Length: 448
Image (cartoon, rainbow, N blue to C red):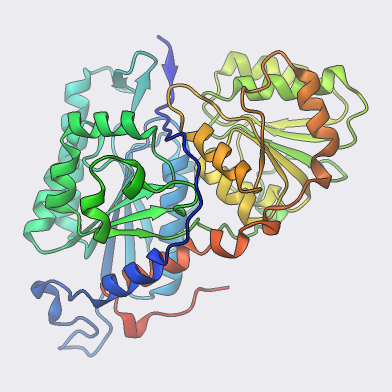
């Protein structure tokens, strides 16, 4: 049975506009009063004079990949740094969530995993039971967790109703309790018309109006603007806030997995994301080094934990024969890999794009175009803004094109030469949007 990743994509028109949407929406969100059930003890517990404990529940539907989980984890870690009275619980279907470390006051509940097949259907990942039973178990865990944890804010990542509608019960329950439900969307979801059809089929638009008080877009309208580009979103414009991209903090090399030996000079960092659909990129980079021994920088290749094991073994054998290529399967703290890098070659998923911006590295994006156009749209618009460069067709059968890029990548302009000041700041904006719910007077600066 062939498996594929549940990818995503978006529109084809590129534009740049000037909009003060972030500040306007931050003020509107901050001015909203908390639900009546939360007014008592908003800043203090009346009986103890201690700060009221606050709770954030995050739903991350991850079926096969790293993107949603890593984004939610970054948000959770930043918010507990800023709000000492906050606890965060992450609901996730990621099969490797246990491979990541979590800060104090951040924990997770793992629901049974599912994966998306190439024909678009889902199946259970580990359990030998039918999909409907797996989904019913997931739905029950999600709803009961929401009921027992009783969060002040419920943040749903990417899927407004969850996988096959599994989150609607929790949304209905928490809405009745007067809790704040927020939809978090990455910068690019899919080609607008395709996404509109999908959301109409799933009944998303009525759910957005019924359940969601706020919609956070983790990006900027210069890259993608759902209000303008997705049919049906204009009427929800007052609920939308553009946060900017989520900045990643540097990590020391001692955070890396034991046994990984980095090249002894600046290298090209090659990132295939989760790896389930990264074979084309890895093959192209290896062919470039195989055909051109004069490439000036070594390569550090990260396959990704979901790459097919047989394919990964073949790539590892090829890498072992190349004196200037080091390869590894997975790194839970990839931020530690960026410091020594001369440049980055990647497929262009959301998290890798945030890392490229955060560490200000010249980058070549080789986006996938199947099953969605998300990466292609992000890369195309970022390239037009001068943030990255792109091989639009994946450089298929052209190792010399990749080799030429590897020769020059270290000298390319960095993202800071373009829109850096406006690009980052997503975590700051999210914290401001959360302030009305998480005791604004007690909010602290982010920990160093």
